[in-house]
Length: 130
Image (cartoon, rainbow, N blue to C red; front, side, top):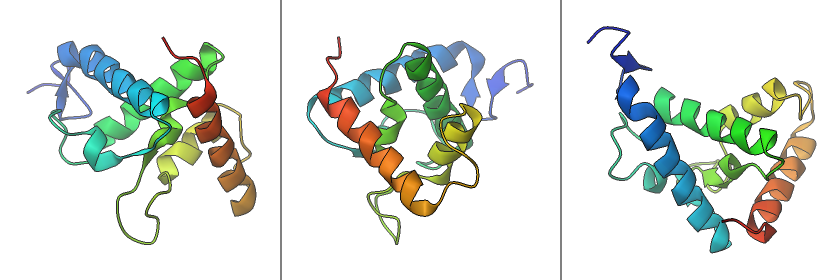
């Protein structure tokens, strides 16, 4: 496939918006249940090259940007690792997106990063989603 047919090498451009909308819908359902969701579970039945694919990361960042623009809590905060030493925590992509949105300093201490994430999860759970 050519670059005009794919985005992030695994998702066709004509599918991108539809898949991102589905991810947002899933994240809203998770928020309404006062939960978080693993990258693996979030990606179930969607055409990603695994739960840590670049396309999934990029879509989560776009969803976070959209939430920020709409003055909503960042739904992307609800996606977390399933296993390992970071089990239950968001990935570095979440924090990188916060820096790009100017919501967090690149040099923010780990504790500040964690507190920001916890606050976003809480806000997602208490927000009135459509």
